Length: 460
Image (cartoon, rainbow, N blue to C red; front, side):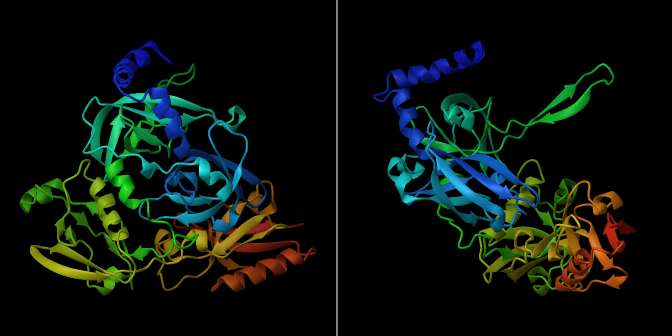
């Protein structure tokens, strides 16, 4: 720890000196609310180990992990062997994956009964009231890696700024906790959860290059804290399924914040707006009569707040949608040209996601295909009701398909000159090719980045 860090810690230590409860006592008690979690992602050719940190939220052994703990496209069936460890312990307990929550992004687990008596939910501690003030000292918990038995350690820093991103977030002067773990004030009150670090920009100098810009992200510690008032009301959003459904669907993308000059011209300087760039055919937004270039000014009677930077309002609008359930009405105040209108959108069910898609690994050919989804049609500018072809999910290095130039995220349109109109059709053709050991080659027509290519794959 640097001398500067030691000096910054002195006011916090002084606060605990006059308190009835010492800092070590508070720290050790709050360790009961944090855990380390290990699991595997079962990929096509290997098992990828993952270690993350989590926070206990109730007496049933429910644990939340940060959004970045699991990539959004990974199927739940590939998540294996969840193990939960107390800080400083090498004795694991099994846990079940409950799924993700679309609104918060958190992933939920439930640990087996044998570990629960030693855990304390974060809700057991009183939260801070109001926003932490500029320069207030906060402290948090970090955990080392497994080779050090997940030993806990103390971190502290001062509040540099409190800002809405769009949720109320404190940014501290230095790292204060491991991502996903709680942060407290001097009295031990719950202040919030550490989020993934924003990263810092640096310049890299070398003999051959001058000042190459790089972004470095600390994955073990963070200075970004989602405040308690944003955390506590949402802890009960335990998923109903491992896929996170039900998920509401609005049906517009490419959203943009209202241009400040436009806002000034329309005398809307004191609020924000969201411009609807693209309305998906057949979506709830389209069915409600929304049009491209409509400007959303209010949701459920509440004007969109003025946030900085301007793009943050797009995230705020998305969160207002995710607060609802499929089938519920979303009341919008919009501006179309110079006319203000009130429109109700009945939210639908989110179309099938990548983590839910059918997929198969063709071991001899060396690649994985999955079904073509609604989201793929948006990426490739195809009509959503004409979901032709299949997507490449994974390509094994050194295989014939890799040598021929096939890549992950390629869109296979034809196999051996036959247009692919369904996933089952593509899978049957590819399995027949894989089973024919005398076949010398096969041909794929793929789309990539708006361009089409013919790949001739040599098998012999």
